[in-house]
Image (cartoon, rainbow, N blue to C red):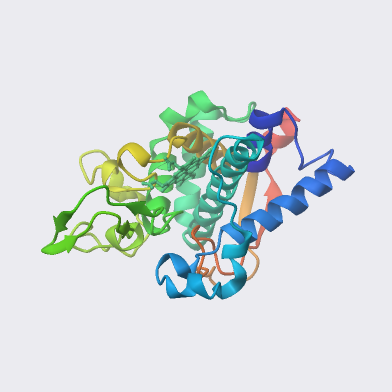
Length: 282
Ligand code: HEM
């Protein structure tokens, strides 16, 4: 879904779904897999320059270093949109479904909210999202516990400054540990490691404490698009299907390692059954 949205924006084409058997679609999916695998990894040389000199993991030799805007750079921008815009939204929807399957009573509450608002004879659309506060709180709580970019993206200090008593020289790479901040008991006093969408109910903790899109002038430029894609994606899954765990075992919350995007270690597997609304509208 997320790849199709971005590719429709970039080239007016879809490469997943009904028409996914043609050669162009196969080639596109192959290229995307390769790009996600090679750019999603953390490069140890960013943290310890010595790894760059010996080109540990062979990452450096694959890095293009463009000097000016060419077709290659423009292509790079499109690839950034695909990279930043597909995996991120898909991963957070997967985490949200994971925690909801772990807490079926919260899934029931979200389904009741969607059913009450939308009913049984139409599919949810983007104008419904602002009237679904519990769904929004579920998304916020998922972002809090499983920030898509747990260390944000690397920034660089533009001048010397002091932070927490440390001197930080100009040109230092700075990473904000959103994962730790969002589980910090000093900020989240009410059981910070538990999944509690209710903590964001009006009058309690403000949503601005969650840094899911970063902060400042380099924060995510697609914040609005991403919120709508994640909201509509998750709400549609809840509205259209009845979800169950594949067996009695609890769903695991184990995080994958070593990537910029925080995905699950093992992809979520679940059982689903179409709900009446799908039969009514299709
Ligand atoms: C759930 C979805 C998404 C999340 C959680 C997310 C999160 C982030 C975060 C944390 C950053 C780094 C901010 C910082 O350095 O302070 C970022 C940057 C960025 N994101 Fe997103 N993003 C999402 C979706 C998207 C989409 C859909 C696009 C494009 C279509 C996109 C494009 C970008 C770009 C281009 C940057 C770099 C901005 C810059 O360096 O100035 N993101 N995003």
